[in-house]
Length: 208
Image (cartoon, rainbow, N blue to C red; front, side, top):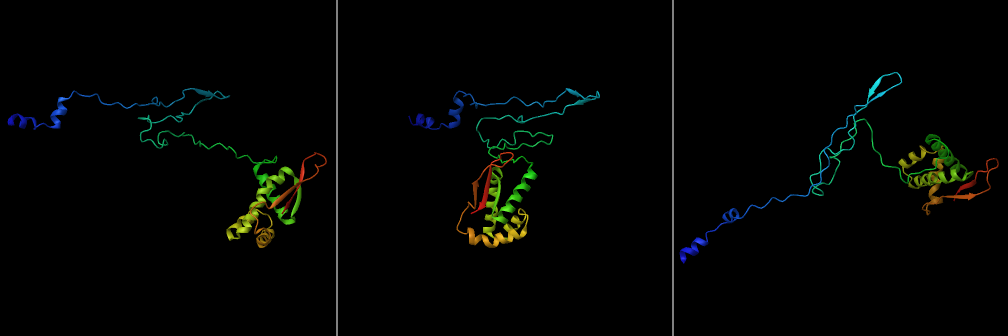
């Protein structure tokens, strides 16, 4: 009995593992994209003079390497996609970025708003259309906010926007006494009669 018990106690894990039937290797559920093939356009465009122009190849956003598995160690897909090699850039859509156009191109619109802001800070009250008054309101508030800060950098920013520098220095000197306790809302819009001729809605805008 002693010999039998000693022979049974000399087993090892290697011998037991070799005695077990081979188990099939586990397979991960994979999700693969079709292999990317660069799309080379063989078509040719003919101009009016009869000259044929070949179209440039476009690889698009096809992944260069397929995903090995879904959700396993993949945090960023920027390295997976190829860029368009024709100098194009992608920008986010301008949702919620609408500004009043005032029937002018951007440079003329900015010059108009700068002039209206300068005149309002100079005279304290001006008469203009309601659209222009509403559009210039935030720029007047910004100039007053810059003046309340009072630093040299903010003064230079105001000088770059307001046309007359004497108004800038007067604004920076008097803004603490007038708007020191007020946080925003430095202008007031008062509606008035429409303009004769084109019946445009008019309004007065003034400093509070």
